[in-house]
Length: 224
Image (tube, rainbow, N blue to C red; front, side, top):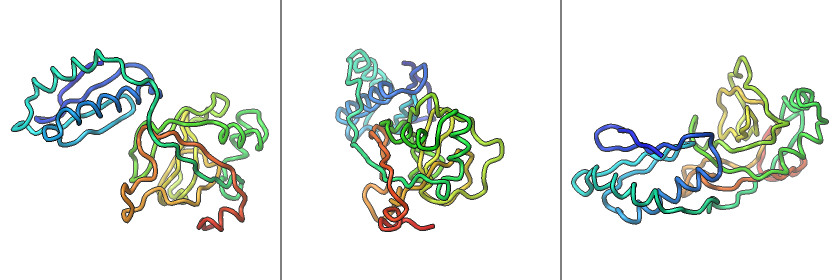
């Protein structure tokens, strides 16, 4: 792990290599230890795929003291498994709700049903949030479903769309542009300011997808 400056009152910690559940677990463990050690000194902690950016109040905590604490804690082997919540999302997989389902099947040499089973039969780690409020990058999908992003992104992807790109999957919380391949749709709101926390998925959560029917999608609040 190495660090760099993030403004006058920030430090960014970075791990080398590809994003993984163990890297996310290590970053979460380090964040939790530091926030417990410096409840007043740290003002914010932002998690990324392989990064943890720490913002501190210099009147409560010096950069030198924080770096020393990071060095001490980095030598402590934390949990290699994320201790996040288990989140199950219902998904209506169909060409009506996921217009790229047949394209993904053809590209992967699988049947549509096999694509659904592969995607829904895995558990995914929430690596990072970004792009739009409530959008969470989940990985890793099966290598058989590895799809490049669309050459020309769509201008408007329906809210709740479940999509894949490269080795990742995600759910679009709101109508927005997007260049991922659509497999289906989730009826649950992914981001709601009236809830606390507003995001349904947080970094470190373990997310799975449960296939549902069209009628179940509509009964759970989904809209066409």
